[in-house]
Length: 339
Ligand code: SF4
Image (tube, rainbow, N blue to C red):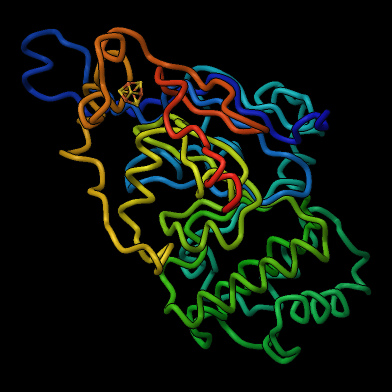
């Protein structure tokens, strides 16, 4: 039996209301709303790296922000260590803010250009009283070493660093408060490929050394496969499949996951044929399809798919998919042998 999840997301929905238009006012209609998250269920287990993937606009960044409570869900709840994070008393809320840290795609926008790296890290260490004042300089040197930056980086300012180095400073700042969880939203997507590999390898090393739990949000399947123990695939604000990385990549059990993987042939250079990715356009998130959210693009859709929205159901060890076709992608002896 698995441990209680460190984080569990239960039925979370989030909408963003658009400004009222003249037509809304004239007709008395409420303003339209983007349905960014639609009844998301997800678990993150202690010490694992969970990759969250999906096309742009699928809600993965909104979900990441709900996990760290930068956004409040409209419905549903997020539990951390068994407790609803929306109901934490102030002291526990403060502890939660320390224990779960987010790292953003663009650390430059979150680093004050007028503060040296020493000031940035000192501030992080002081806010949560992580060290006595006298021990702060040594801890700053230690943090810079952890992210493989030289000790003299402390005296420099954000604009003096490259994008990859700034990302390391962002990681050092997050580590200053000794978190248990890092939520990395498109951590390396703004970096060159060679620099991406360095930052990803650093993250893998830190996860191992510091026993961190990592939520890695990305659109790059290759990176997600490389770094994650488990993967969650999102489509139109819903988790449609989740499972152990190799099982999900070898035998996706949801038609959308299969389309997404088939559209990325570089995942398997030996593969000769390229099956078409999901047909058609992503539906308008202002006006979601009834029934399965993927029914407008799914080649396997049948009557039930237009009437009833499927929930995640079990497809194998720790493997779940939200599809009425419970046999879709079922592993054969050959695919099992390949895993
Ligand atoms: Fe396709 Fe139906 Fe499964 Fe949705 S429920 S993915 S439409 S087969």
